[in-house]
Image (cartoon, rainbow over the protein chains, first blue to last red):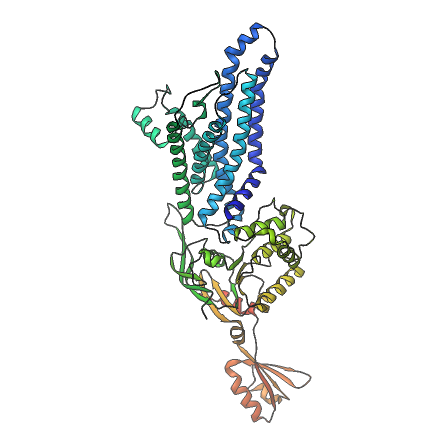
Length: 266
Length: 309
């Protein structure tokens, strides 16, 4: 009951959070801008347009998908950092923890509240996936759970990381570090052609940073062809277990630091 | 009877990261609060009151010493289940209404909020917030916020109520209502631990007083005992011969009253004065130690040079 109360309260707060509303409005504007040429082309008639759809539009859709997915990771990290930091800043944490609530329960409730918001985000993203596929004249054949569970696990990692960092630093600094980790993890991913990083550093960072590529649902969804790549259940289990394990380690570290820190109105 | 709150040689030092600089917020503080007692925790700004209360609630950790609340360490769920807490400058989730906030706190306490409609309505009436059920707390005035803070502190019928500046932000009428509420809670046998700057109000309800200054305890004891230890006594006599005022009563305050004469002398000279009055054939009607007010006591202790050293 305590966890549910904290999670729902956090979710309610997030829906009213002005920074997050602004963040989402910005994302929606960018999406609309990206959609405009797509819709113009779709409405155009003739063989030349059909050819252009194949050549240019479908890759555009793929990049939009990546943009939304990346935005979701940042949203998860910021939300997790902000829900903890704002409770500390406002001092509401004192009234909450004066109740028979353990510190880890408080943090877990906050984490679950963020996941609730990210679940809504993922559902919206899922709807957008199907909408974009329809606009591109293709159909998505993969099972929806892949498009829900994979991004959720990825968002869990980034929200746990944001929560871990915010227990010791300002939320903006925490967010910037998560951003660096996100960019870094895509740079060190296998298959990335970058060459400026020495191999030993690349290997080291590959093991430390969360593997966003492994947890990317686009591994199973090639929107340009809209075909499902064959994947064994062991493949799913390994990738998801890795992601959940990463998130759990980050969360446990956050809980451990939060357990021993002094709580006051910042 | 076991103490509700125990502080044993508690020291708290704030240290700056990457610096040798340190601030001793509390130094070797020891006291106990008995069940059913109203304990006033007093001190000037920066004395260490909020630090002590934060440690009592388990928000801060002492560098040394031991704190027990109902026999448990601070922050222990068994202790927190019995505590109602009002932090200084109570903060809230601004998007909630008062009933929703109280329901949220009931859930945090592990209770079912669905069957608590009457309890919530009763509490809101008690703090005079009925009629504002649909107003979001973000739109409340400072005094209303304080009232909802008090309501949430009383929500789960706590045995110990910890109040950090409960009357701050309230108008005189609001302060009087809070005092009446505290007196009612005292009558119900609740233990109340409060810090406040409004000493005449504290004096009305407190049983026990602890005064700290610069992190050190400077005075502690029953309020009656502390206030009765005034420096002067009041002697009422039927008359005072003029020659006596020139000799034995030199330096004393002699005032005529309707029933005789009132003589104020230092406690050290009370015996000498009474004997002189008797010897002069006067009738000594009464002798009363002059009570100082809590404010006088507080200022005396806080202003004393090296009082907190």
